[in-house]
Image (cartoon, rainbow, N blue to C red):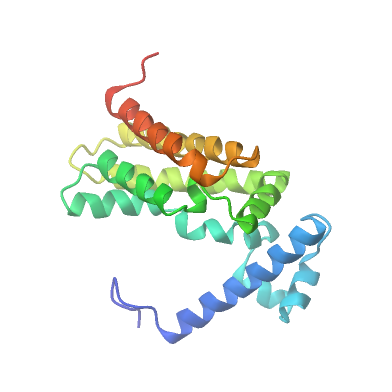
Length: 213
């Protein structure tokens, strides 16, 4: 029997989540040490003390072992829109507030995080073509989920929802890349924060009012 919506996950689900996290952590550690292409799936399975078939039950592709850290974020914007709508908050207002909160919390997804392990992970991710390609597929799914959430509102136009989702996902990506680039160049998250907050405000004003080009 499935759990009720919003209910805490059961023991089986928690055990699966722990196993998935352990597999991903073992893989990322090996990839950081030796490079993504130099490590085989068999070596990851051995390091995690599981069989290859077991590993593939959790992660259908080698790239997914790395992008597991993005899994919870894939439909994050869609969830924010849906929750905001239930609370009477407009989608862009909900997304803007969520981004500002993420920046304040140094959420790695915002790019405003200078923890050494996060920086090493990002170098691995963006320095590996196969992972960049897989990340694009993640963003496509994220955009589709957001479009669905936007179209569920009173406006309900699927094309407009897709257009809006594309702009929003691109804005979030560009803002994160700007923050990541500055930190990679040697600035700290604290030094970048004020500009990152201001850029987020500017970006969402442009989304609300239309781009001046």
